[in-house]
Image (cartoon, one colour):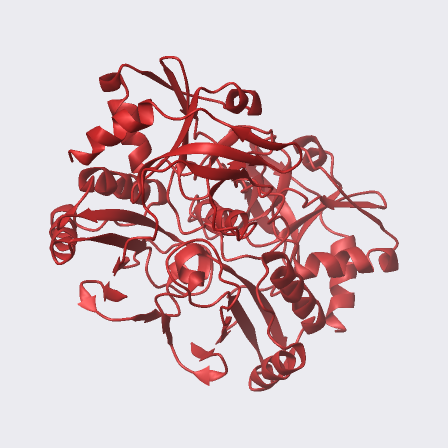
Length: 271
Length: 271
């Protein structure tokens, strides 16, 4: 792993960094395709919105964009991860307002097994953390995803779905959920928890282009069962069709593959 | 700040540490009094319970206790903070199960203005994060407390109360809530969110000794208004009586001071 901390090649950071102390920061995980950072505008917009909501001094946008483009240009294909923390501070939750944010950028190889094949998914017991003031943001507070992802080791299962305490399905541990029935494409509302992925945004914006009406709403188990198609979105892997959902008790739901996902994927490949 | 990382004097840590990447870890904030770590047993028990629940390999208990006692013995009075993370790993939420935990211990001066005087408290807008699988643990996912604590700068206000999405008061940003009416001492249930403080445990265990019946239950605004006494507990500052609660709209609730808090404080001072 190559790492740059505040633009300099380094692999360590100060133990007083609030990113470590409190998870006081945000991150972006970006796909590098043919030396370019895919959906970079969307990543930057989400990051800056997150900084505003957490009252973190946002990195200067033009310089940051240039830095990320330069890092991506060194790589044919891969993953570029950027962490922005509030920076160092004394002990105590209260931000002084004078912290200098820390920026940590790393390049990684693509995860294995990125393909267009439909994947298996499980239903996780670990719920998504609910907090309306943090909902949608990709913060460093990710223990819900960590515990949900620790629920299985079967490499045949690609993703796990997480619900809120009221039984609404909110997101995968690392991806967003889409459920299609006819021309209606639904994805969970993220007003209480979950991460609003940039690929989710892209799908919402491109649904009409493949003849779908997209909407954000609560998704219940009945919606999964009655779906004609289910797929997951993620900035690195794009769009993955779900071929089967494992149910803890009653066996497996099989889902007929894959119409809209294929059409959206074809569009995405043009980027 | 003096820092020890895995027992060695150091001030940096690896950027791949999952404590930074995902807030994947726990911490304890301990009071050092007369060269001794107060309530060390309770801190160690909570930490090890947290490791079990997060499936983090717990540090060896006897060695850890000795290390903390040694650090405390160098200081007449102060704060000893210990962070335990899952350790380093590759990108991705899933723990491999083979990580080596990182232990970061730091010594700090006591916060200013620790006294027995009654404090002012506000009612925060930032809600507590709700997740039954994390509730009660002192994890590194503390953005709810950070945002709540960022709501005010008035140094006259010592603490802010946080509620869950259903309007139950759960905890302060850095302390636990107790509400007394007659001989009944109530503290919020922490089954959905909040940190179960070691001082909260101590108060629950010592309430009977000062003639109180303690119970954990939901606390509503009505309970604050009808209280005869309100106090907050925190491992570093002990027990602080609340003299007034600022209300965003309707002004201030004044609370008659302070019976049980004084008696409990006298007991605590014997430790």
